[in-house]
Image 1 (cartoon, rainbow, N blue to C red):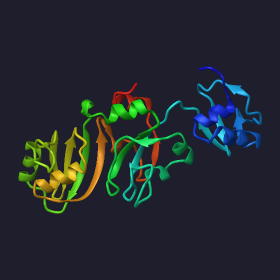
Image 2: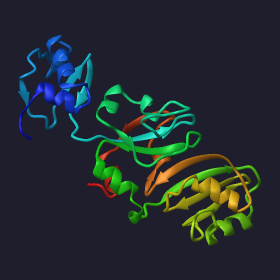
Image 3: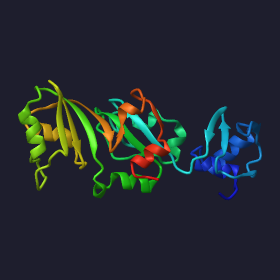
Image 4: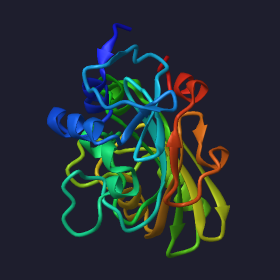
Length: 238
């Protein structure tokens, strides 16, 4: 990559406006290669660059691709209304660099959530044309019956939907838990499908997006990390 002034590098990584980044540098809060840099005009090759801001180390990333084990009680919105936004679980500079969720989970739904500041990635992962399967585990108010599983696989009619919606796959996990795989992303779809099939969703978690499994990520609720190159490839993004 072309060499770039340090203030521009910091701005691209979400550390504030150009003016704010220049002030950080001039105040001696930024180090590169273990040495404090106070001249914001100093140029570096961003590729592979590591630097520290307020003694915290960062690696330059043209874009960030993130995964969160979303806890209940958080909204997937940059302007939350009734609950904290999921971005409050991340460093402040991620909001500066316009990180957004890939799709949404309800405030009371937990589990696997992707986020990025790469618009092309967000669009590709959200596009209904890709039919990216998403796996959910629902805790039901009433026992899971064979009839319920069969109805979800056959398709149920939802209000305002022109045709019945069916699960790609569905199986009973135990008396009150059911796993449902969908390739659509309709509003409150799992909850509405369960209600239409004669049951009720008491709790819901997303356990997988495509082949990326929440159980393999080693994340406690509320924890996040960067997606690996291998995980991005599994999502069809290389």
